[in-house]
Structures are given as structure tokens and as C-alpha cells.
Length: 371
Image (cartoon, rainbow, N blue to C red; front, side, top):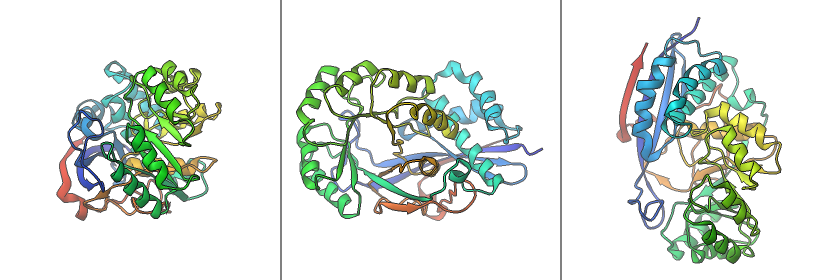
């Protein structure tokens, strides 16, 4: 019987340039200078490796500890082939640590790595194992925040459009910045607004009324707190399409948002909601509602590959969110923020093949737990 012999965690923080002012993703945050990936590698006793990624960014130290101290003892020595059985074994004992946050992020990474192993064993790229047939995908450009600098917004939206992107997302919070982006491209180009949960319902409704005739593709997470689905539904009633989902972690929580009529575009995140298995449950739920699925994917590691394979498994064309930034080193062949089209590798599994020569200077830590 094949068993999992070791779990390795690797934290990598890649510096990047944005093409504009260096600021935090919220006004109260320090400037964001690196994008960190917490990678997980499961190794079996027959020498195979499966890759996963846990969300993310500033919370990775806590998730790293959860993986090594709490998840690894439940996982090592186990047969990786029955993913649902194994995930139940490690998920249920952890429910007391929260159904969102580092524990779920850790479980998401494990599930992705198990699916990587399973599709390697099946000799298929993951998207084919999930029922997909087309490896050709399109990205959308997800810009960093430029602190409301309308010139930087217009310049970077123009740069993204010149690179071929017809769907471009901002992370701004002011109407002048929104309109600078809208004016920089053609009317048929899609401008999306991700405002990162800043407003009360009254504030968000007022903004929605102000911009509803400007032709924005969606308004993402307009209210605080993000789980206030009734508030999101009230904003949606103003006539602007609402997107949300990256801060939802379980199928029941997704159902609550759908039941509330809170959204038009559902954005589950594979590194936050239970990995491939969790995403499949969310997809099945979404397919019973009149919503469109566009996964959240503001990361570059194995989770980026997993999101792309999931997109390729969908029956309709599904865009892959891609951070429109320039990294100090290209992490792997699949990530190219300057190209709107790409093709998944034909290799079995995720096909995650990082360039460690390029990444090694940016490795923060490597830790291995063995059986």
C-alpha cells in the first residue's frame, strides 16, 4: 500500500513591481512589496510528489504552523488514494479551530496536493480527470491598488489592454479612479471593480447608484463585513452586478450567499475553500443558480495551476484571474502576467514545475515533517 511519507512546506516571497505607486491593498496597510506563496509538497513512499498551496499572503506563518503541527500527524502514513476518506479524517478533528482561516487554508493545500497525486496516478492532466477537454484558457488582468492615482490607473489599464486583456480588474475605492479606468479602454472592454469590503450598506448603495450607468462589469465585495449577505443583496438591487466569494470557505456559507440573492458572479478560491474537492462542491451548487463562476486567484503558486485546471473543467469559458504585476523572477512557465491566453501542460497532474534556480533567493523557509 502506498502511503504519505513526508509533508514539506515552502514559503517563498517574490518581490514585484506594479507600474504605479507602492501602497497596501487597504489604506491602513503598509506598502505591499512581495507576494508570498505557501507551497505544500506531499511525498509518498514510492517517490511521487503532489503539490498544493495554502492561502496566503500575510497569514502564511500561522497556516504553515497549522500544516506542520496539526495536519501532518493526521496525514502521514495514510493512503493518499481515497481523497474524500482522507480529507474527512483530517477535516473533522480540526473543525473547532474554525471553518475559515488557517485551518481551512491548510486543508485546501492538502486537498490540492492529493488531487495532483491522483491525476498523476491516472496518467492525466488534472483538468481531464475533472471532465474537461480544452486546455486553452484566457486570463483577466487583476491590477494592484494605486491609491486612487487616476494617472496610474489609466496608464496600467491601457498597458493591460495593449497586452491583449479585454477584462481588467481594479482594486481602487474611488469613483474618479473607476471612471479613469472606464475612459481608458473601449466600451466593450470589461472593467471590474474589486473594492475589498470598505463600505457600509448605505455607502455602498450610494456608490452603486452613482456608477450604475457607467458600464462596469461587476462590483466586488462592496460591504463590510463580507458575510453580510443581506447588505450585498441590497447593493445589488441598485442595478450593479455584484461579485463575491473569496472570503467564503464552506458550501453551506456559499449557499447562504446564494439564498440571500447577494451576487451575480461567484468567486470561490481554491486555496481557501477546501481545495479541488471544495471547489467541485461549490461548482455543483452554483450550477443550480443563475450565477456565473469566475474563481478568485490572486496568487502564483500551485494554487494558480489548480485554478486553471478547474477553469478548464467548466462547461463554459472561465477566465483565470492573474495578478498584473512584474515579479523579480518568473516563478514557472504557466504564469505570464503579460499574456492574455495560455495553454495547460499535457503532463499528468497539475503540471507544477517551479524554476527553483530563479526562486531560491526568495525562499523564506523550508520545513519537512516525516512519518
